[in-house]
Each structure stands twice: as structure tokens, then as C-alpha cells.
Amino acid sequence: DIQLTQSPSFLSASVGDTVTITCRASQGIYGYLAWYQQKAGKAPQLLIYAASTLQRGVPSRFSGSGFGTEFTLTINSLQSEDFASYYCQQLNTYTFGPGTKVDF
Amino acid sequence: EVQLVESGGAVVQSGGSLRLSCEASGFTFEDYDMHWVRQAPGKGLEWVALISWGGDKTDYADSVKGRFIVSRDNSRNSLFLQMNTLRIEDTAFYYCAKVLSDYAFDSWGQGTLVTVAS
Image (tube, rainbow over all chains, first blue to last red; front, top):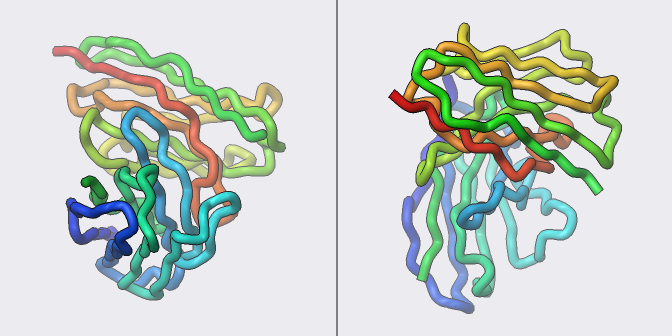
């Protein structure tokens, strides 16, 4: 079974910061990785798919990169509405990473 | 606009059964694979089940295999999750989600809460 790890699990940041979250897969998944944002009490929202493709309507300050086993989500110039939890997901067997909470 | 609306969540005794529904609108439901994902309160996301667009292929997380059954009725634009032999650890918000080809889940419902009591 393909496992995902995320680092860090918690990230303290400020408005205007650039933050990077890493997702590692236990085996190669090519580019079949997605990133989601989830705010408290809400359903997850798709940010990035196919490792680096920005979902329609998602601000360009979000970007993704990576292939195989290591992937990153970068948020440039963090905005107040970006304080949330972020999850990666591999689309071979659909498992999610444990999540990263971005907070003040 | 794509809309997914789950229903059927409730408080149920351990060992009991429950059937969740997800009503879809705003897209051609019969063209898309659909998934169920759950999230225990305060915890991360866990993939639960997949059903192909035609309903002929299903797959399950090991944690629910043999207890949960996913189905769909394309004539009613509806997705279902029959949950049997429920356990305390099945307590979670359950979301239905639509696929964006093989690449992601691009639309999610608001979730329905299942609480399994001892």
C-alpha cells in the first residue's frame, strides 16, 4: 500500500510569508498527486492536481511541483484566508497524507 | 454549478447499519467515477470507497472492506454507501466526491456526520 508523509505537520507563519509543504510517497506515483485545502468545519477544496496544475479559480500564489516520490506545495505571499489545513493525496490508491496545519 | 449533497448521517449503535446518500446535480453524473471519503472529528482525511461511472467496478479501504457497500443509481443522480456492522472507529464526517479524471477529487459535498455509540 502506498503511504504518504507530510512535513511539517504544523507550520507557524505570518501574512506575506512564503511557505512550503512537502509530501513524500512510499513508492513512485509519477505525477498522480493532488493538494487540498481544508478550513475548519468545511469540506476540502482542490488546489493542485497532477502535481503542478492549478485548479480553476485557485489563486496563482499556490503552486505545486514534484514527480515520483517527492512533492511540494508552495504558497507565496501568504494571505489571511490561507490559514488552514493542507492535505496531499495520491491518485493510485487514493490515500491522503496526514495533513499540515498552517497557523499564526 | 456542481452540487453534491449528502444525507443519512445519524447516531447509531455499535454493530448497527446505516445508509448514506449523495445527490448530485450540475454535471452529467453517469459520466463520472465517484468516491466516499471520511474524516473523524479533529483527524485527517481517509479514503473509503470508489465506484466507477457505470457501477461495475468498486473498491474499498481495508478498514471498511466486507462491511461497507458503495452503489449508485444513475437514473436518480444518486450515490449510496451502505454501512454495516458499524464500529466506534467509523464515527466521522462522510463526504462524497466527484473525480477530475484520474487526477483528483474536484468537487465535494458538505459532509454528513455518522456517530457510532457503544
